[in-house]
Image 1 (tube, rainbow, N blue to C red):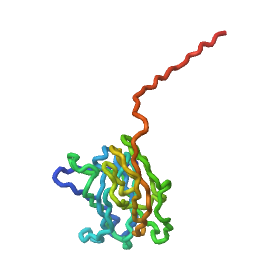
Image 2 (image 1 turned 90 degrees about the vertical axis):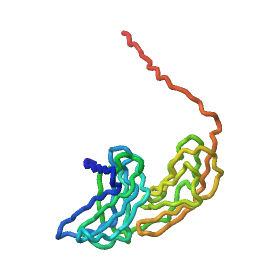
Image 3 (image 1 turned 90 degrees about the horizontal axis):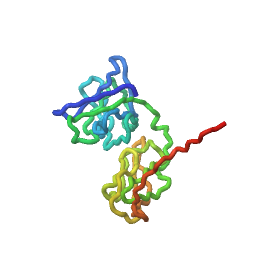
Image 4 (image 1 turned 30 degrees about the vertical axis):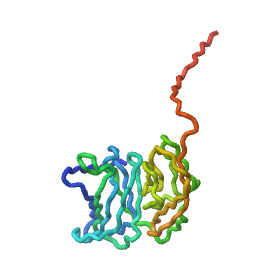
Length: 231
């Protein structure tokens, strides 16, 4: 991405970006993609609302995104607005929370926003599942990444709640965090919402074990062998 937008304002945490398609043009947007900036993740947006308007004053809510998470710089994430059916001159994004709300000055940084119209009604979306559906982590080691069978799912929830510091990424369904205590193997229900706004659930097994052997510190010395060619 070659574009970049950074907005900071210590006195006003919410910020807006408005697209104006012109007086003689209307667009329907039911999918949008936002790419994180090349700045630190403190400025990544996590919560925002999308609005449509034809006069620039009266705004109609098209959808909300909460707890979005970006794991890398200039990473693009896409989100669906299943209730967005009408065309508007203005499409407005109201950002209300960033990844780290204690960052000063408060603000947001993104690389790009794209507005799209896709055939949501014609999509065939499989029931939610994870393969494998047994997740095992180890104390002191970042929890292994697991992704659902379809990246179009969002708004992930888990029941019962995970043991801290483990947490479910509500945008991708991955479990993040480094376990500090063991967790007896148990069954959890993960639920997510598809682009049509319908929920799907699946069962997974999660456990955290202690490493069988103690941690060993070691270093690797690379030795280069030189061979002299003689005639």
